[in-house]
Image (tube, helix red, strand yellow):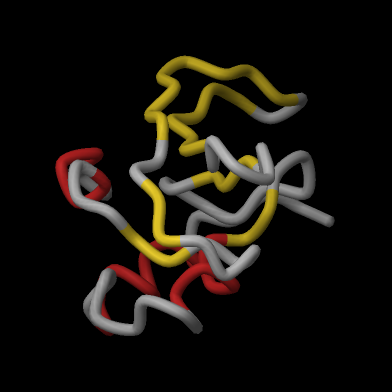
Length: 84
């Protein structure tokens, strides 16, 4: 599982702002419970543990912050994805 500690520093959001994301634990969707992050500027929510159609895909955030997840973490994120 991805550690929320990775999000304790400022990152560039998809809205192009350099922000400190808010970490929100235990958000439910139809398939389970997630830890998500939310941008304080655009308020977009990203699931950090697996791809979920209820939230933005973290891979979009990785386009602006390419060293945030290792290749193994990216594979695990996609492997555990919910159905679309």
